[in-house]
Amino acid sequence: QVQLVESGGGLVQAGGSLRLSCAASGRTFGNYAMGWFRQAPGKDRECVAAINWIGTITYYVDSVKGRFTISRDNAKNTVHLQMNSLKPNDTAVYYCAARSGSGVASSVPSTYGYWGQGTQVTVSS
Image 1 (tube, rainbow, N blue to C red):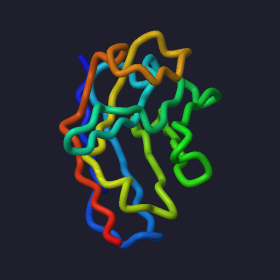
Image 2: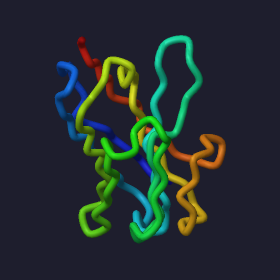
Image 3: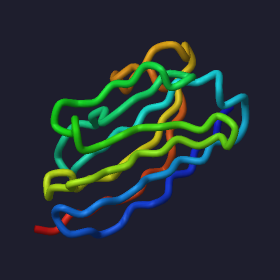
Image 4: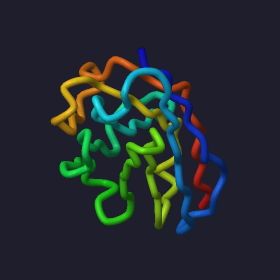
């Protein structure tokens, strides 16, 4: 079992930055690939970024490439999402997720078995 707790969301103006953090507890963090997902009202949950167990493989959805960076610190059981140049359509609830099969930075929500409660990110224009 893995427990995930997100933090760092909030309200920011367009062009601003936020850094989301996800703290994991439970089983060995390094055994899991990690992902950040978001869901806006009326929309499907989408993978924003994902990272494999050691941080050598990453995935980014096209809309955030060059603006967002995912990273992890296995010694501290944390994964981060640095979000720069935020836009109003980045507004959503952001979720941290963990999956076994740690070598793959999957973008598919159904492959993740553990989810945090989410943190709201609101970008004003």
